[in-house]
Length: 481
Image 1: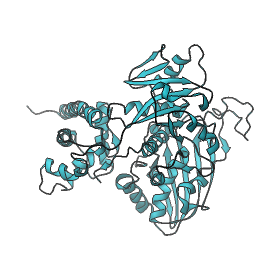
Image 2: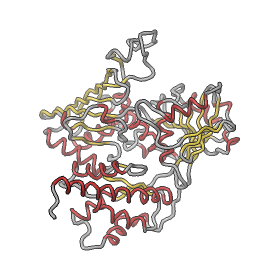
Image 3: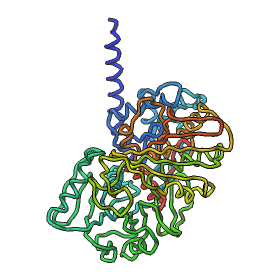
Image 4: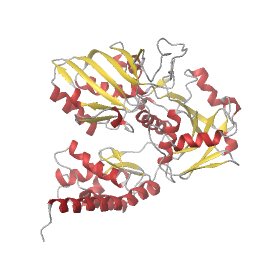
């Protein structure tokens, strides 16, 4: 009997679901038991739903000449699951597509191909040990960092969330902290189970046991009393931004290093992962992860400067409102920020353009910047107006940025979209520092205007976690190279 078009489509969809459901336990076991993170063209599949796995395969067609089918990638995943591998991030999509459509296999079997492509992690022992992490402060960034660390929990977790430090301790505080982790108006519900341990002042989330420590200053805390030692303290409070203030954390027993989730002052290194994280040394006790905007624009600027050279430019950020602004008109020490964030576009200053030079010194003095706060709660945009040292055109520049997003060392920082319909809410949850909107690109001779979206909360938090891993010396390769 000949199947109708509708029946064929339903059969095809069922096949995709079956393969995705078969992939889920393999992906989970690879991560929990071996520290292997599986991705499809940069899209992480750890803890992904069946629909997320299907969608990740579908996105391959945005970068390649044809789509990648789940029945094509599944044999590669199955073969990887049978190998003895050290911790790494493996892009299943690139491996499978290269073998099937680009003749990368060159007559080899799937097993022989994988043995060559993954040779550097076969039968190798992981040299790094897990690092205890303490989140000092539990606001917007702190809670998203907690979600990311819990998501990547397990026996092979590089970073173990051991505690959060907050002020308070009043009746009901523990339940409220847990509730804010459980529910988020922007990022949705927590994917898992959260319970409160009243007796020990702790939150239990998907196997992570998180001690809640109440303190008004680092001087009050002895982390070793909670079994925490050699810890990386991630300061999310914004109270201190210089060495004198942040050094207080190092006085706490059990603390080893400090990472600030905001721009730092003085000689503290401001790190934009993917650009200057190689400057982090073992001797660096205090490091800054810079700002969300600096993280969004610097990787794109580096790529363009390396290719075309940047003579000068201006960066205008259209930024969602933040907790620093007032919900309704009220006193604020800064100009204009006292006006209602939910009702107004507010012109304000940003140090992001100048801060680029801390991560990318060759652009020092070449960029100016300003910002407009707008009535949206999350996802921002940087409009980058550049005068280049060489001429190009729209198609060439977009092709270069597309290839950079896919193949370069900045592929975890830069994403690329060719959609003509994308709007800010579509980027909520993006794990990239910035997303190039290719349809908005304008080029005229040596002038280029780029539009870069960024989830100023979640995308930035992903960048922070990457810096944390470097500071904790738990760096694993991304394969294939």
